[in-house]
Length: 587
Image (cartoon, rainbow, N blue to C red; front, side, top):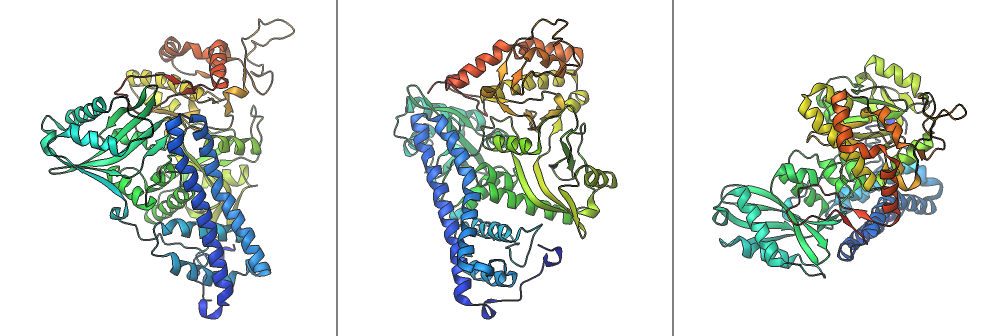
C-alpha cells in the first residue's frame, strides 16, 4: 500500500457503498474467522486426550497443525472474497465501509480483538500492505476484557488446606485416576505452608483457578491464585501422567517460578479458557513483568501475539528517542542484527549474500526458522516471530546501521518516504550473548553458565535438535540466568544427521587439518571437532569437558539419535520436581 494512505481515515461510509456487497464481504471474513477458531479449539481440545493417553508425539504434531491454521484460513477467506467481489476485491474505496460494518457487529463480542486481527490479516493479504494502512485496518486495540469475564473455579478454605486441595484435584480430574490423591493433597498443602508459613491454613481465604487445564509437553497445569487475608499469591500446580496414574509433580507459588513455566523459550500451550483475552489479563496480573504479547503467543495465539508486539513497539518508539543500533555481539555471517537499546527485542535481517564458510541458502534459513517454530522449544529455543513488510522510522537508525542494511541487504530492505521497509524480519527477545557474558561475570558464574551451556546442548539433543553451529556467540543468557540458543541458520534434526569418529589422518585424506571443512556431506557430523568451537578460557573448557565431554563423542550422539528413532520422548520440565523423578517416558 502506498505510504500516503497510511493513517488516512476512509471517507466512504456505509451510506455511499452498496450495502449488500459490504455486508457479504464482512460476513465472509467473520465466517472465515469462525472456521479458523473452531478448528483451533478442536485441535486444542484434543490435548486432554493426548495427556490421558500419553500421546506425546500426537501432541507435537498438533502444535504444527495448529500453527498452520491461521494462514490457511486467511488464504481461504481471500479466495472466497475474490469469488464474491471479483474485480472490486482491490477497490480500496470499498474497504473502509466493510471495516465499519464488520466492526459494529463484532465490537461487544468476547475476544473481538482476535476477529479484528483476522480482518487486518485479510486486508493485508488483499493489498500486500506495507506497514499499517489505517484506512482499511483496525488500528486501535480493543478495550480490554475484565478478568470477571473469565470462568473461574473458587474454593473457600476452611482452615483445612488438605481438604481444599483434595477438592481441587477432584474437580480437575481426568479419565485416568490419581495414583495417590490423598498424598498429592498433602504435598500441595505442605508446599503452601512452606511458602506462606505455619499459619497458612488460617491466612488462606480461598483458591481461584482458571476453569481449564493448560497442557504443554508431557505436563498439565492448573493456573490460579491464592486469596490471603491481606494479599494474593499466584499458584500453578503441575500434573504428570505417571505409570501408576496422575500425580502432582510440583506446586509453584512465586512469580519467578511461574514466569519460567510461561517463558518465551517454552512451547505453546493447549488451553481453552472462556475468554482468551481475559485469561491473558489474568496471567498478566499474576506475572506483571511478562509482556502481554508473549502471553498471547505462549497460549498459541501467534498472530495476536505479533499484533500486540507490534503495537507495543510503535508505542515505545513514540515515547523514546534513542537510536536503533547494531545488537551486541559479533556480526553474523547470515543475519544483520539490530536493536533499540531501550526495548528488549532484536531484529534479524538476512544478508543478500552469505559470507564464507556459510553454504546455506536463503530458503534454507527460512525453513530452519519454520522448523523451530513447530518444534518443542524445551526451554532452550527463543520464540521468533516472522514479520513481512515491517516498517520502522528511518530517522531512528544509526547512520552506520542504515548504511550496512542498504549495502548488505538491499534486495529485501527499501525506503518508503521516511520509513525503512523490511520484506522479511525475524524478531525475538534480546538476551546477552554467551561469549560476552562469560567475560563480564565472576569465575563462579562463568562456570555455572558454561555448565548450563552443556545442558542446553543436551536438552536440545533430547528433543531432536542439533544446533549446527556451537560457537558461544550463537547462545545467550536470559534474565533468569538460563542459557538458550537463538541462531537457527544451521539447525537440523538429530535424526537427520550422521555421527562419525574422525578417521586417522593420512596424506590422501587430511581430515584432521583445521583448514579442512568439518563435514564430508551436509549431514555428516564429527563431534570430536566440537572442541574447536569451545573458544573459552582454559579453566572454563576444563569445567565443560569434565561435565559434558560426552558431547564430543560420536557414541553419545548416535545413542541420542537411536532413542529418538525408537520414539522415546524426553521429559524436560521448567521447574524442580517435588515428586519422584523419571528421566524418560517410552510410549
